[in-house]
Image (cartoon, rainbow over all chains, first blue to last red; front, side, top):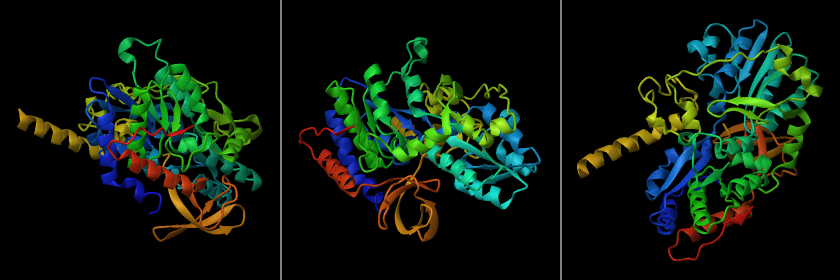
Length: 384
Length: 82
């Protein structure tokens, strides 16, 4: 396919990786965080870590909306779906995310709740139009990439004068999450994630542009390279980061120039601002409560806000205490360092959210990376 | 979740919609977020909405930079300043 195949050329990837190996200074360790689950997935799937020299290390970031959604919000969604008048429409990614007490949306559906998997938020609006006796709630999650589509759906429901459509909004913002990773001054030393730079978001940046990362790059003196999700994009971005580190630069660079501009998409930004406003605070799995890090519906659109229509009162809910998703999301631990990984937690029966979505760090490592670990163990043993 | 796929616009439809095909499957998607979409343009499709148009010149330039980065001994080329 055009714009995909040419960016998956393995020979070219190996050659660029050889350039990285030549330019990475011996005696210096480079640790970069890829923010997005899309990058995590590409790195695992295409074995990019195998191409890199040993002193260039990638750590996974929190950019997976399914992974960072706290248990309490899934509990809220299940309670909503169990109301007899409600039809809950959701992206399939959320169906198996563990909630409190071993529940999830899939089990709630099996128990009779009207939960429907949809491809697009537009489908939820069409279901509301076709079934006027149902209260159709769209379980909205996602970073800035997905928020414009939710905004347009609310606009569509308003134009259609639908009174039975609402949105349970869990849209979150990227820059505050990057800030939370970098702003570690107040944390004890063992909890600090020290990275030398970021592979910046791909499709989030098509919406918000590259400008919002500038303040972060300057304040925390870290380079950011916005990169596409294809393997060559990631390898090229890593080379650009190595060069910035070597030259002492902390700039925002754009590798993904075929899709991303400095300003982003002004129509999408306008649609978001028209309907949503920042929440004072929002709970993230792994990162805790972050100020101004998520969106809610403005008062003018209160009629479409499921939290107000159904008076959802957040109830605190604890993660499975043995689950290390929180530390994995902050880059403090690698998936295989969690004792649940591959024992009781696998994509078939996930205990934590990072094992659910294909872009979750644990699911990506389970599907692809663990085979590399095994091969390495065998070759290490052979060498010994 | 943030995955989006490059897809060619086959036909423009009323109300900012367009017909696209991928792997033989035809689908109607929204192009309300992108201005002046034309038949033949490639857009990035995410949950039924086009997010942006792909720039063919910048795509070519990216591949050229990648090929350059793959050649030993060439001076360091700085990426596009954002």
